[in-house]
Length: 121
Length: 233
Image 1 (cartoon, rainbow over the protein chains, first blue to last red):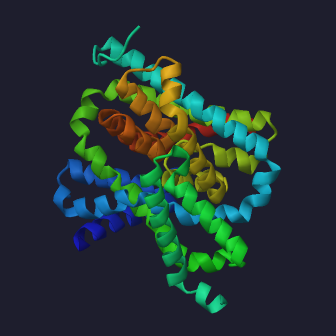
Image 2: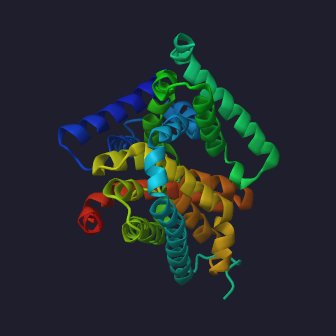
Image 3: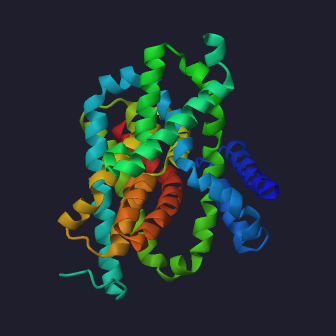
């Protein structure tokens, strides 16, 4: 557990450092995730070492969203002022993304014969 | 009162306690609109406003939970690693559809907000809206959005997909369960994936996979997309 936590924190710290030191446009947490993935692929880190910490973090991830969500309290004015662009963009864009991703995936999987029986057309 | 509410244990106990109750409520009611994150945030905002507690005081404890978002993103490496064989086998359709969805997300969110008169900080806060919160926060901060506004938008986006996503997919003729899963994960991250758990386990696995891939894809293509997004500023 402790060694797993150390590995994850070191990955994150390295990612944050690379992101800020080289002024990269990519968030440090994503670089950290990429580094950990590479470490797993090349066998530098064993799955067993990080498994329990990863599961704890992923199972409780929803809770970690709460404080920043409560932070919207400071932006009520902005949200109220730009309610229409925010809401319309959010709703329309969600359905657009769903349609683009779903239709592309369905078409490509059908072409490769990997679709399941529930496809009827 | 101030001394008590500024105690780090206060913000921590309040967040974890309300979240625990919200999750119980969701398990009992199973209504998508009762998403535990949404309910907890709404309840806490109501409590802070009603009791006149400063957000800064609440964050004395809240910051510890907030910090764990970063390690959570790093932890996403594990589920991706564990599914690497299946991912590699279907790499082309998975990457193509998630890439298409991520590009569509950035372009549609920013252009619609621009056309309806959104200001720059709102447009930039909307750009990473489809990906999971900790990744979206990192992107928002990098490109000059308002991370707390992005967080709000991301959670609400998840609630939309979680509420009516599978129904919408059926409506537009997307029935392949892998495709539905990827559409849910790419458009509405973890909240969409939780909904897929109720629909189909295989679909949920692909939805979960899409969270990590869409997050990574969006983070890595955002710099290349910025010249286009800049048109809307």
